[in-house]
Image (cartoon, rainbow, N blue to C red; front, side, top):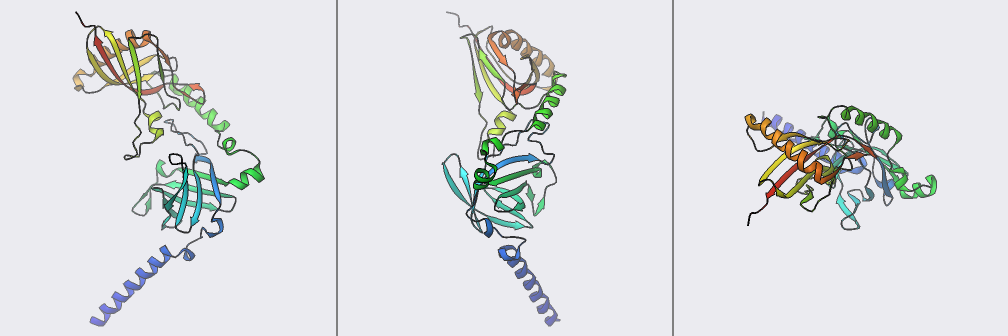
Length: 307
Protein backbone atom coordinates (compact mmCIF):
# COMPACT_ATOMS: atom_id res chain seq x y z
CA UNK A 1 0.00 0.00 0.00
CA UNK A 2 2.77 2.44 0.97
CA UNK A 3 4.74 1.51 -2.16
CA UNK A 4 1.71 2.28 -4.34
CA UNK A 5 1.27 5.68 -2.69
CA UNK A 6 4.95 6.49 -3.24
CA UNK A 7 4.70 5.47 -6.92
CA UNK A 8 1.59 7.61 -7.35
CA UNK A 9 3.35 10.56 -5.71
CA UNK A 10 6.32 10.30 -8.08
CA UNK A 11 4.00 9.99 -11.10
CA UNK A 12 2.22 13.22 -10.08
CA UNK A 13 5.56 14.98 -9.58
CA UNK A 14 6.80 13.73 -12.96
CA UNK A 15 3.63 14.99 -14.69
CA UNK A 16 3.93 18.38 -12.98
CA UNK A 17 7.56 18.69 -14.00
CA UNK A 18 6.70 17.88 -17.62
CA UNK A 19 3.90 20.47 -17.58
CA UNK A 20 6.19 23.13 -16.18
CA UNK A 21 8.89 22.27 -18.72
CA UNK A 22 6.36 22.48 -21.56
CA UNK A 23 5.28 25.96 -20.46
CA UNK A 24 8.71 27.43 -19.71
CA UNK A 25 10.96 25.81 -22.32
CA UNK A 26 10.45 27.74 -25.58
CA UNK A 27 11.80 24.86 -27.68
CA UNK A 28 8.85 22.67 -26.62
CA UNK A 29 6.21 25.14 -27.84
CA UNK A 30 4.67 25.38 -31.32
CA UNK A 31 7.18 28.09 -32.27
CA UNK A 32 9.76 30.45 -30.81
CA UNK A 33 10.24 34.18 -31.30
CA UNK A 34 13.93 33.71 -32.13
CA UNK A 35 13.52 34.11 -35.93
CA UNK A 36 11.93 37.57 -35.51
CA UNK A 37 14.08 38.86 -32.66
CA UNK A 38 15.19 42.46 -33.22
CA UNK A 39 12.67 43.17 -36.00
CA UNK A 40 10.52 46.23 -35.37
CA UNK A 41 6.87 45.86 -36.39
CA UNK A 42 4.16 48.48 -36.88
CA UNK A 43 0.49 47.64 -36.40
CA UNK A 44 -1.28 48.34 -39.70
CA UNK A 45 -4.69 46.75 -39.15
CA UNK A 46 -6.90 46.08 -36.14
CA UNK A 47 -10.20 44.51 -37.10
CA UNK A 48 -13.08 42.50 -35.70
CA UNK A 49 -13.53 38.99 -37.08
CA UNK A 50 -15.99 40.32 -39.69
CA UNK A 51 -13.18 42.43 -41.16
CA UNK A 52 -14.60 45.77 -40.00
CA UNK A 53 -12.96 48.41 -37.80
CA UNK A 54 -16.30 49.22 -36.08
CA UNK A 55 -18.95 47.33 -34.15
CA UNK A 56 -22.64 48.26 -34.05
CA UNK A 57 -22.13 50.39 -30.91
CA UNK A 58 -19.60 52.58 -32.71
CA UNK A 59 -16.48 51.25 -31.00
CA UNK A 60 -13.57 51.69 -33.38
CA UNK A 61 -10.45 49.56 -33.48
CA UNK A 62 -7.43 51.76 -34.19
CA UNK A 63 -4.03 50.24 -35.09
CA UNK A 64 -1.39 52.02 -33.04
CA UNK A 65 1.14 49.58 -31.58
CA UNK A 66 4.84 49.39 -32.44
CA UNK A 67 6.54 46.28 -31.06
CA UNK A 68 9.84 44.43 -31.16
CA UNK A 69 10.86 41.08 -29.68
CA UNK A 70 13.93 41.71 -27.52
CA UNK A 71 14.22 38.17 -26.13
CA UNK A 72 12.15 35.02 -25.80
CA UNK A 73 10.68 36.46 -22.59
CA UNK A 74 10.84 40.20 -23.42
CA UNK A 75 8.65 42.27 -25.72
CA UNK A 76 9.28 45.95 -26.37
CA UNK A 77 6.41 48.32 -27.18
CA UNK A 78 6.39 52.01 -28.05
CA UNK A 79 5.17 54.27 -25.25
CA UNK A 80 3.67 57.53 -26.62
CA UNK A 81 3.79 59.01 -23.11
CA UNK A 82 7.49 58.27 -22.51
CA UNK A 83 8.52 58.44 -26.20
CA UNK A 84 10.61 55.28 -25.82
CA UNK A 85 10.40 51.57 -26.60
CA UNK A 86 9.42 50.15 -23.21
CA UNK A 87 10.24 46.59 -22.15
CA UNK A 88 7.53 44.17 -20.98
CA UNK A 89 7.78 40.64 -19.67
CA UNK A 90 6.56 38.29 -22.41
CA UNK A 91 4.83 35.55 -20.46
CA UNK A 92 3.81 32.29 -22.08
CA UNK A 93 0.37 31.22 -20.84
CA UNK A 94 -0.89 28.20 -22.77
CA UNK A 95 -1.37 27.04 -26.34
CA UNK A 96 -0.20 29.96 -28.46
CA UNK A 97 -1.39 32.52 -25.91
CA UNK A 98 1.02 35.06 -24.45
CA UNK A 99 0.70 38.02 -22.12
CA UNK A 100 2.52 41.34 -22.21
CA UNK A 101 1.60 44.94 -21.36
CA UNK A 102 -1.32 43.61 -19.28
CA UNK A 103 -3.00 42.07 -22.36
CA UNK A 104 -3.39 38.50 -23.62
CA UNK A 105 -2.68 37.65 -27.25
CA UNK A 106 -3.01 34.49 -29.28
CA UNK A 107 -0.27 34.34 -31.89
CA UNK A 108 -1.90 33.35 -35.20
CA UNK A 109 0.98 34.07 -37.60
CA UNK A 110 4.67 34.85 -37.26
CA UNK A 111 7.20 35.68 -39.97
CA UNK A 112 9.96 38.19 -40.62
CA UNK A 113 7.57 40.31 -42.69
CA UNK A 114 4.43 40.18 -40.54
CA UNK A 115 2.76 39.12 -37.32
CA UNK A 116 -0.91 38.48 -36.61
CA UNK A 117 -2.13 38.51 -33.00
CA UNK A 118 -5.64 37.86 -31.75
CA UNK A 119 -6.37 39.97 -28.68
CA UNK A 120 -8.15 37.62 -26.26
CA UNK A 121 -9.78 37.69 -22.86
CA UNK A 122 -8.46 34.84 -20.74
CA UNK A 123 -10.34 33.66 -17.65
CA UNK A 124 -8.61 30.80 -15.85
CA UNK A 125 -6.87 29.39 -18.95
CA UNK A 126 -10.13 29.64 -20.91
CA UNK A 127 -10.46 32.13 -23.78
CA UNK A 128 -13.76 34.00 -23.49
CA UNK A 129 -15.97 33.39 -26.52
CA UNK A 130 -17.32 36.94 -26.82
CA UNK A 131 -16.48 40.33 -28.30
CA UNK A 132 -13.53 40.72 -25.93
CA UNK A 133 -11.71 38.01 -27.91
CA UNK A 134 -12.92 39.21 -31.32
CA UNK A 135 -10.03 41.45 -32.35
CA UNK A 136 -7.23 40.66 -34.80
CA UNK A 137 -4.09 42.80 -34.95
CA UNK A 138 -1.84 42.71 -38.03
CA UNK A 139 1.74 43.99 -37.85
CA UNK A 140 4.16 44.58 -40.73
CA UNK A 141 7.91 44.89 -40.34
CA UNK A 142 9.10 48.46 -40.87
CA UNK A 143 11.57 47.25 -43.50
CA UNK A 144 8.77 45.39 -45.34
CA UNK A 145 6.59 48.53 -45.40
CA UNK A 146 9.45 50.70 -46.67
CA UNK A 147 11.19 48.37 -49.12
CA UNK A 148 8.46 46.06 -50.39
CA UNK A 149 5.14 47.91 -50.06
CA UNK A 150 6.73 51.36 -50.53
CA UNK A 151 3.92 53.12 -48.67
CA UNK A 152 3.61 54.80 -45.29
CA UNK A 153 2.25 53.01 -42.23
CA UNK A 154 -0.36 55.78 -41.94
CA UNK A 155 -1.71 54.87 -45.37
CA UNK A 156 -2.06 51.22 -44.38
CA UNK A 157 -3.81 52.17 -41.14
CA UNK A 158 -6.68 53.99 -42.87
CA UNK A 159 -10.25 52.70 -42.65
CA UNK A 160 -11.65 50.82 -45.63
CA UNK A 161 -14.51 51.29 -48.07
CA UNK A 162 -16.32 48.51 -46.20
CA UNK A 163 -16.02 50.56 -42.99
CA UNK A 164 -17.58 53.58 -44.73
CA UNK A 165 -20.46 51.50 -46.13
CA UNK A 166 -21.10 50.03 -42.67
CA UNK A 167 -21.19 53.47 -40.99
CA UNK A 168 -23.48 54.83 -43.73
CA UNK A 169 -25.90 51.95 -43.19
CA UNK A 170 -25.70 52.15 -39.38
CA UNK A 171 -26.23 55.92 -39.44
CA UNK A 172 -29.33 55.57 -41.61
CA UNK A 173 -30.72 53.05 -39.12
CA UNK A 174 -30.30 55.21 -36.00
CA UNK A 175 -31.17 58.50 -37.69
CA UNK A 176 -34.61 57.15 -38.53
CA UNK A 177 -35.37 56.80 -34.79
CA UNK A 178 -34.82 59.82 -32.53
CA UNK A 179 -34.26 57.54 -29.49
CA UNK A 180 -31.65 55.36 -31.22
CA UNK A 181 -27.92 56.11 -31.36
CA UNK A 182 -24.37 54.80 -31.54
CA UNK A 183 -21.10 56.33 -30.34
CA UNK A 184 -19.50 58.97 -32.56
CA UNK A 185 -15.73 58.90 -33.07
CA UNK A 186 -15.92 62.71 -33.23
CA UNK A 187 -18.33 63.52 -30.36
CA UNK A 188 -20.96 66.24 -30.15
CA UNK A 189 -19.72 69.84 -29.95
CA UNK A 190 -21.45 72.64 -28.04
CA UNK A 191 -20.29 76.00 -29.40
CA UNK A 192 -21.50 78.90 -27.18
CA UNK A 193 -23.31 81.81 -28.82
CA UNK A 194 -23.58 83.79 -25.57
CA UNK A 195 -21.29 84.72 -22.69
CA UNK A 196 -23.87 83.59 -20.13
CA UNK A 197 -23.31 79.92 -20.95
CA UNK A 198 -20.16 77.76 -20.73
CA UNK A 199 -19.42 74.14 -21.52
CA UNK A 200 -16.70 71.72 -20.45
CA UNK A 201 -16.16 68.25 -21.87
CA UNK A 202 -15.32 65.98 -18.94
CA UNK A 203 -12.53 63.46 -19.52
CA UNK A 204 -13.18 59.98 -18.12
CA UNK A 205 -9.74 58.54 -18.93
CA UNK A 206 -8.54 56.54 -15.94
CA UNK A 207 -5.51 54.26 -16.18
CA UNK A 208 -6.32 52.47 -12.91
CA UNK A 209 -9.72 51.32 -14.18
CA UNK A 210 -8.32 50.91 -17.72
CA UNK A 211 -10.54 53.62 -19.16
CA UNK A 212 -8.77 54.73 -22.31
CA UNK A 213 -9.33 57.61 -24.73
CA UNK A 214 -11.83 55.36 -26.51
CA UNK A 215 -14.01 55.47 -23.39
CA UNK A 216 -14.23 59.26 -23.79
CA UNK A 217 -15.84 59.08 -27.20
CA UNK A 218 -17.97 56.04 -26.37
CA UNK A 219 -19.46 57.74 -23.28
CA UNK A 220 -18.95 61.52 -23.71
CA UNK A 221 -19.83 63.73 -20.76
CA UNK A 222 -20.39 67.47 -20.65
CA UNK A 223 -20.83 70.06 -17.91
CA UNK A 224 -22.89 73.09 -18.89
CA UNK A 225 -23.27 76.15 -16.66
CA UNK A 226 -25.94 78.77 -17.36
CA UNK A 227 -25.60 82.16 -15.72
CA UNK A 228 -28.69 84.33 -15.38
CA UNK A 229 -31.03 81.32 -15.42
CA UNK A 230 -34.64 81.66 -14.25
CA UNK A 231 -33.65 79.97 -10.99
CA UNK A 232 -30.93 77.82 -9.42
CA UNK A 233 -31.00 74.20 -10.57
CA UNK A 234 -28.74 71.22 -11.20
CA UNK A 235 -29.69 68.29 -13.40
CA UNK A 236 -27.82 65.25 -14.64
CA UNK A 237 -29.24 63.26 -17.50
CA UNK A 238 -28.57 61.22 -20.60
CA UNK A 239 -29.60 62.59 -23.96
CA UNK A 240 -29.53 61.68 -27.63
CA UNK A 241 -28.19 64.43 -29.85
CA UNK A 242 -29.64 63.89 -33.30
CA UNK A 243 -27.89 64.11 -36.63
CA UNK A 244 -29.67 67.48 -36.98
CA UNK A 245 -28.34 68.80 -33.64
CA UNK A 246 -31.64 68.45 -31.77
CA UNK A 247 -31.42 67.23 -28.16
CA UNK A 248 -33.78 64.60 -26.81
CA UNK A 249 -33.59 63.82 -23.07
CA UNK A 250 -33.56 60.07 -22.36
CA UNK A 251 -33.17 59.63 -18.60
CA UNK A 252 -32.82 61.82 -15.52
CA UNK A 253 -30.39 60.66 -12.85
CA UNK A 254 -30.90 60.81 -9.10
CA UNK A 255 -34.71 60.69 -9.08
CA UNK A 256 -37.28 58.11 -8.00
CA UNK A 257 -38.97 56.08 -10.76
CA UNK A 258 -42.30 57.82 -10.18
CA UNK A 259 -40.58 61.21 -10.68
CA UNK A 260 -38.74 60.22 -13.86
CA UNK A 261 -41.19 61.47 -16.49
CA UNK A 262 -41.90 64.87 -14.85
CA UNK A 263 -38.15 65.46 -14.38
CA UNK A 264 -37.42 64.48 -17.99
CA UNK A 265 -40.02 66.99 -19.20
CA UNK A 266 -38.49 69.69 -17.00
CA UNK A 267 -34.97 69.04 -18.31
CA UNK A 268 -36.27 68.86 -21.89
CA UNK A 269 -37.73 72.34 -21.38
CA UNK A 270 -34.36 73.64 -20.18
CA UNK A 271 -32.66 72.05 -23.21
CA UNK A 272 -35.19 73.53 -25.62
CA UNK A 273 -35.02 77.03 -24.14
CA UNK A 274 -31.36 77.41 -23.18
CA UNK A 275 -29.23 74.84 -25.01
CA UNK A 276 -30.96 75.13 -28.36
CA UNK A 277 -30.82 78.95 -28.37
CA UNK A 278 -27.50 79.62 -26.66
CA UNK A 279 -25.40 76.94 -28.38
CA UNK A 280 -24.61 75.93 -31.89
CA UNK A 281 -24.94 72.16 -31.46
CA UNK A 282 -22.76 70.17 -33.86
CA UNK A 283 -23.84 66.51 -34.01
CA UNK A 284 -21.38 63.67 -33.52
CA UNK A 285 -19.83 62.20 -36.65
CA UNK A 286 -18.02 59.04 -37.68
CA UNK A 287 -15.97 59.04 -40.89
CA UNK A 288 -17.49 62.45 -41.57
CA UNK A 289 -21.05 61.11 -41.39
CA UNK A 290 -23.38 62.85 -38.86
CA UNK A 291 -25.56 60.54 -36.79
CA UNK A 292 -27.51 60.28 -33.54
CA UNK A 293 -25.24 59.74 -30.54
CA UNK A 294 -25.84 59.51 -26.80
CA UNK A 295 -24.19 61.81 -24.24
CA UNK A 296 -24.34 62.53 -20.51
CA UNK A 297 -25.15 66.09 -19.46
CA UNK A 298 -24.72 67.95 -16.19
CA UNK A 299 -26.71 71.19 -16.52
CA UNK A 300 -26.28 73.81 -13.81
CA UNK A 301 -28.40 76.95 -13.69
CA UNK A 302 -27.44 80.02 -11.64
CA UNK A 303 -30.19 82.56 -11.05
CA UNK A 304 -29.65 86.30 -11.32
CA UNK A 305 -28.68 87.56 -7.89
CA UNK A 306 -30.94 90.36 -6.70
CA UNK A 307 -29.15 93.38 -5.20
